[in-house]
Amino acid sequence: QVQVVESGGGLVQTGESLRLSCVASGTAFRINDMAWYRQAPGKQRELVALITRDGSANYGDSVKGRFTISRENANAKITVYLQMNSLKPEDTARYYCKVERFSSSYWGQGTQVTVSS
Image (cartoon, rainbow, N blue to C red; front, side):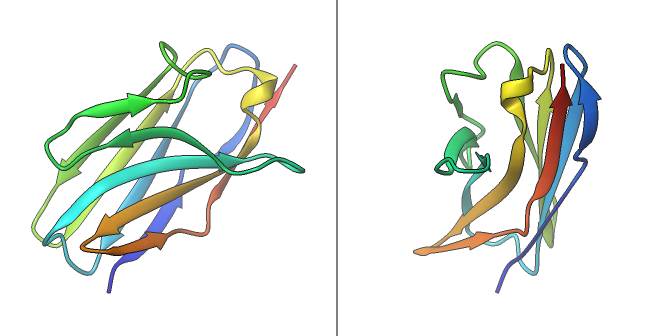
């Protein structure tokens, strides 16, 4: 079983930065892709960024050049970060972390990011 906990959200102004953290604990064995998704009210959940086991990263078009995903591996947990720069009001959403292990996916409860104009 994998536990997933996000943190780091908050209220910021346009142009400011935030760093989100996601800790996947319970076991780090065979945790593969880790990703950040977001969901705004009335919209579908969308992929923000993904990082593979070997550190390769992919980003959604709307965040390329502004967001950076990174990953730290440890014995019993893995932490994935999302550095968000030059935030815009349209980045306002609840951000969720998703962890892939074998054929299962594990989600956290999310952390709210609000960007005021």
